[in-house]
Length: 329
Image (cartoon, rainbow, N blue to C red; front, side):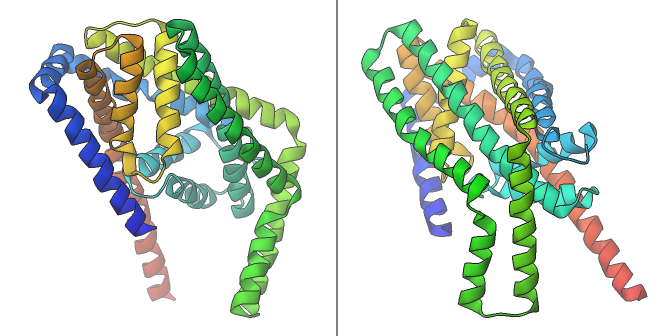
């Protein structure tokens, strides 16, 4: 997996460099200079979609964790997934750990994240479907949108199968028992099986709470839609204003490309190539599309690095306190 991620990163970086070299870095930098400090507003703007996501996550946590606590955990989760080579799952593991440390039962924390990931997949599916409809409305490109519809149709059974397995399949118990057969029995293995059974039970409880699932899906979809404001404003500041429909199409399909090719760290090259391709269909020049991509990456770095630093500080402080507690005892 590490080798595959490294290869994907090198290929993606090569694609990104090639696209920038072809269009000319001077033109791209001129566009970014035109927008200047206005692009910095993208950093606080990101708080809105993250906050909407938090409301969706909170609907899945039985204990009703505080919004502020969930907000900073969500910021760390996003930073880990966006900036570190963790194949878009490391942030979820970090989120479970931090939520459990904040006082939520560990099993409930894990169940909330697992179900939230599924709800996010469904919300992203609906958002991408909306983006495809917007693209067809704007361009009339039947062939391109037809291919995208086929991709959507083929991915739907995967999401449905995942939902069925989580709801009825006792996935984590089965995985734990398989591991126990491979590694042998023992106290640690028995405890793991018990924890996995409790996790499957918590997940089934969340699936039965349909009103909570609907609320989570609503907030997640609202968060994705709010994310299109970043594209809409950035293009306006770069001197190429677009309508809301165009912004939704660009944001949804770019996010779909990054999530589909998830092995590439930070979507290097994937985001740039998808923006250039969509820009071609929507009448946006390649240099403007690449400037938009760099503006988005600037926002990811400026908002993500402080979150990663805060995470490391939390982990370091926890480790220090644990070490001191052991030394005192």
